[in-house]
Each structure stands twice: as structure tokens, then as C-alpha cells.
Length: 389
Image (cartoon, rainbow, N blue to C red; front, side, top):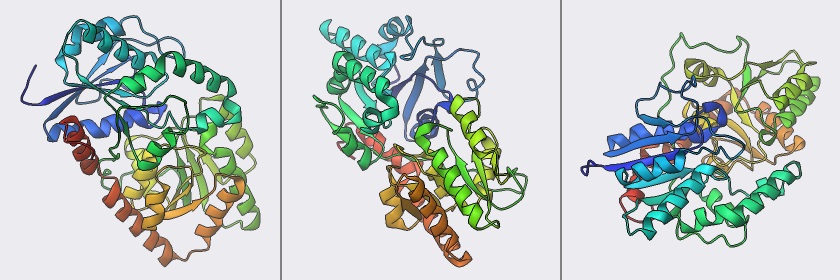
């Protein structure tokens, strides 16, 4: 093992960008840490021929697709036993998976044998948010999580060297969810994104008319239905509203339900998932970014919009809302249809100068709180044992 640098292994069930922010967070974080002398590799339970693999400039160990909701894979534990001594640190990304259990089991076995083991950190990425246990639509999943917590995941959390959170709100909410939650340490290490691709004229726009942008997974917790209904109400009052672009994967039952809900309004456009220049073009081209989520741990797309100097209209369930409100980079309202309507009407009431000023403030919020350089420095300090960032 190369002792001139710290060697970190990230473990995640999937590197599929359609799965949400954790995989994208890894892709932002690793190059920034490499520049600081921290080497990172990833092990994931994806199919080796997945289209989203093979494009990254860091090592990804692909063991094959996991099975079932927990992504069970029989080769993960043997792989960890064989390679664990090559790493100084293991970071588990996400909970409620076989991957987190496998790390805990192998580390405990190594300790019993008197072997040296890496430090183990857990980044729950919002998966300890009480919303997941309280929301009525998740009763069966909440019961499953409660059982899994008592039998397995409690050990993962309480035996890890520390829990790593992306913002203070996530850290505080995690304390409310399960009994016997007693982590050894809790650190708010922040989170960030790399500077966005600079705008250029060849960047495509999803439509040519003025528009507001929702860019995220089309999932029940994202409040897409609230947005469509609030936008319809606004259009009924004012036909001159900017169009609404909803950008996210369209292949789920819920996405198809949302397309059907919006079919009577020709000003609502579903583009499918946007990546690369298509994503950045959509962000640079919009008047405002909207995300009325019922639960959002961090919101990488929100930060990407801030970095493009775009006002963000978000619910107070997006965990970084305090930083945005303090910096006047957006508008905050409850995660209800009325709250979402308030977001839209409040923005409409602003004149062009006020909207431009809010966009400038949005970029300042990004610079102050959410650059990848700041997040990488905080994580490096944790990894090198320099204490709570």
C-alpha cells in the first residue's frame, strides 16, 4: 500500500446517476480529494456492462448487480476480506443495504483475529431522516427499516468510527428517528459541487421560450404533484407565465402518473433525464429552479442551480434551506400545494432587477457554503484525524 497518501474505499450499492445524489457526490468529491493527496476507489454492486460505468477517472470495482431491495451480493464479503488491508479508511455511502452490513461484519471479524482494520465512516445521505419512518405512504418500508435497524443497521451506525453528515440539519434530524441511536461521533463535514461547466452558446436548451426548471428524480417525495397543481392554478390566473420544464427519468409508474396529471397543460414539458451540457444548458437557461420536496437531504441539483446564479424556489424540507434563506438566494415555503403556490407567486411578484439580485445572491450562497474545495478540505481533516471540521 502506498503510504505517501491516504487510501480510501467508498462503498455504495450503485453508481447509477439515476439513483440520486450520492453517486454524483462521490464523482464530485474524488477529484478534489486527489488534488489534496487522498486517493479514492469505489466498490459498487452494479452490472459491469452498465452504460454509466467506464467514464470516470478513478477506479471502480464492479462486482455485479446485487439482488433484491438490499442489493445482496455473495461476493462482497469475500472481496472485502481479501482487499481490506489495502485501505486506510472505508466510507459507507447510504444505509438499508447489504453493503453496509458487509463492511461491519468483515471489520468485526478482522478485529477478533487481531488484524489491523481501516477507520469506518458512514454517510447516511439523509436515510436517517424521520420522514422515511413517518410518511403514510411508506408504512411497509418503515416497518422493514425498523426491523432491519434492530437486527443489523444499529450495529453499522453505533460501531462505526463516526457518522458523516452533509449539513447540520441532517445531523439533527438523524437523532429523532430510531431508538438506541448512539454513534461514537457525529461530524457535519458539509458537501459541495465542482464549479459548473462554463456556459457556451452551443449548450442546448430544453425549450426556446422562457421557463422555470424542476430537475431531479420524478419521485413522490419530490413534490412533483404539488408543483403541477400549483403551476396549473397560476396558469389559470395568468396565461403569460413562463413554461415549466420537468427534467428527470420518465420510466417509473409515478413519472407516468405525473405526465398524465400534466397532460391538459401544454406549457408543462417533460424532457427525461438531462446530463452533461444538456443539464447545464437547462440550468443556465431557466429563470428559476424549483424543488418543493417533502424530504431532501442536501439537494445537489439545488446547489448546481445556485452555482449557475439561479434563484431557487424550494420547500423548507430541503435541508440546506437555512443557508439559502440567510443568503437571500431563493424563496422558502412549506411542502404543501399552497406553499408551492406561494413560491411561484412570490417569484412572479418580483421585478427583473429583484430577480437578477436574487440570482447574484444565489451564487454567493454557493461560494460561501457549497464549493467542492471547502467540502474536500473538511473531509480531508476528518480522514487525517484532525478532529471535527
